[in-house]
Amino acid sequence: MPSMLDAVVVGAGPNGLTAAVELARRGFTVALFEARDTVGGGARTEELTLPGFRHDPCAAAHPLGINSPAFRALPLERYGLEWLQPELPMAHPFPDGSAAVLSRSLAETAASFGPRDAGAYRRLVQPFLPRWDTLARDFMSLPLTALPRDPVTLARFGLAGLPPSTWLMRRFRDEKAKALLAGLVAHVMAPLSGFATSAIGLVFALAAHARGWPVARGGSQAISDALAAHLRDLGGQIHTDYEVKRLDDLPPARAYVFDTSPTALARIAGLGDLYGRYRYGPGVFKIDYALDGPVPWTAPEARVAGTVQIGASSQEIGTALRAASREGRAPDAPFLITVQPGVADPTRAPEGKQVFWAYGHVPNGWTGDLTDAIERQLERFAPGFRDRVLARATAGPPELAARNANYVGGDIATGAVTGLQAVLRPRLSLFPYATPHPAVYICSSATPPGPGVHGMSGHNAAKAVWRRLRQT
Image 1 (cartoon, rainbow, N blue to C red):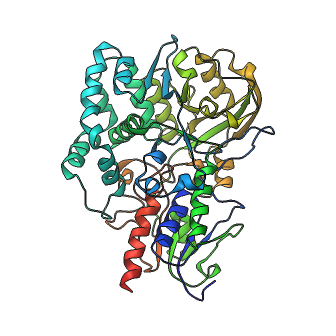
Image 2 (image 1 turned 135 degrees about the vertical axis):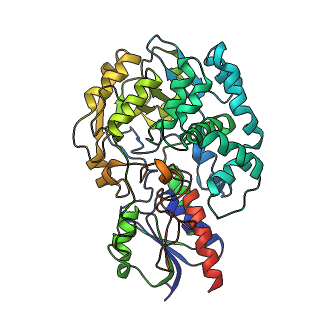
Image 3 (image 1 turned 120 degrees about the horizontal axis):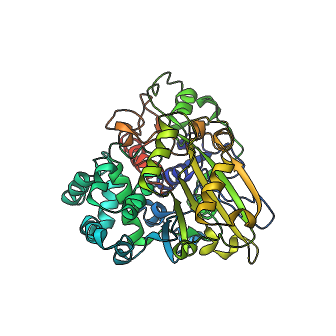
């Protein structure tokens, strides 16, 4: 190892790996340190239940990954990453056996909402689709890391996206469109009435129409392994099983980049109460299942969808989110996000079997057991589900936080996506990746553009770092 590195990155999640790759690509010497025995963070794959059943402990479907400007600029396919598309990106079934869908086809999606709302959906989404790649880059590169390439479209998107999603839903008359959009917003665990929540729903919908919601062949670990292999080829070093408790634990470097929670960064770098006002959001309770066959959904559309949202109405979804985020209790009828990777990737389980995961929102740090409530919800839409269960692995907020230190209190978004913190995180600053320490930066999901396996927080932070390194 050189006597003085250009950059040290702490944390080998998708953002830390991307930051390290971006710096190494530009000729800087980089070393990456990870507390766990493998790289991955929120993009891992493990046998959690039975031999031969390969589960993704956190992220499993990747609408933001395949659409990420950072990932798309890297040769990750050369290192084994292969995106697999289910027949439908997402389905939202209802108790009567019908479903709304998020399809690659705008027309098919609109038609699933019914005749009264099909036109409203097309008018909402269509203007942005031809400019999606530029919009995604502008949206995910904010704030001041790059000048917008298409400021007019970005401004139009802001007008549609900054209001609460409850305003967006007023464009629709029937429940199918409202429930599906409410479910999209709930992917970041934000209350439906929150600032900029319309943008969240729109981004997920546009991502589906542009490139789908794929899974990675073999599991989400393939994304992390591809980034790690590329980093090594660029000369970067990776050290696992290396827990960092203070800056002195790391080798000398011109810059230190942290893919950690703001709380951990402040502790390690001696920054005191710098992030004292940063708020963490609800936790999740997650179950990974080994199933003796596919989920017996009543709605045919759900049987071919990679992701299935479970919430009988926008009101039920809103009630569940309020219970977890504002009322401090687990919801009686939790909103569920579920993924069935085997619909697109049969390598995840032995022949004829399936892996399946589901999670519901619970208060931050909650220590109860949501298994029964989750399975009651699943039985409403897939009668006989429990009969298919061979094994389950459950993880509530304490287990998730122990597995990944960034998930403070079980918050898989590494910070509440509410209020100004939805867009200005981890503190009110035009330069969110920098800290008062001139050599210390943060690149985790606690920074813009926020949660998801897309690497853009790492990309944006790396840009801030290399600009400084070239000045010194």
